[in-house]
Length: 125
Image (cartoon, rainbow, N blue to C red; front, side, top):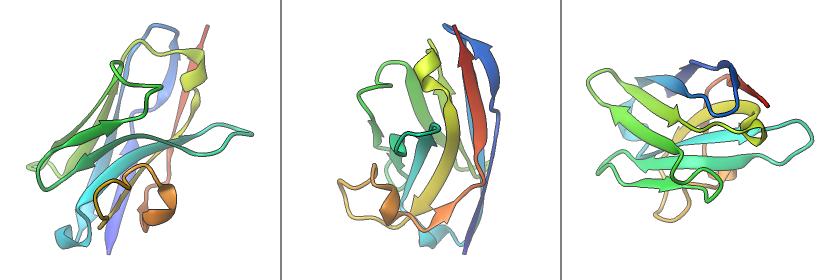
């Protein structure tokens, strides 16, 4: 079993930055990939960024590439999402997720079993 708790959301103006954190506890071998997902009202959920926790390889949606950075701090059991140059279209509830996945599926929310409760990010123009 894995527990995930997000924090760090808030309201910022366009062009601003936020750093989301996801505190991880539980059985470490239950997952090898972690991801950040977001869902805005009336829109489908979107995989934003993923990381292979075994080797640190990172993956990004085209919509955030160059602006967001996913990272992990194994000593603190924490996953991060640094978000820079935020845009109003980044407004959404952000969730972290974890599971054991085959390569190439980090972006698919249906493949993740463990989810946090979410943290709201609101970007005003």
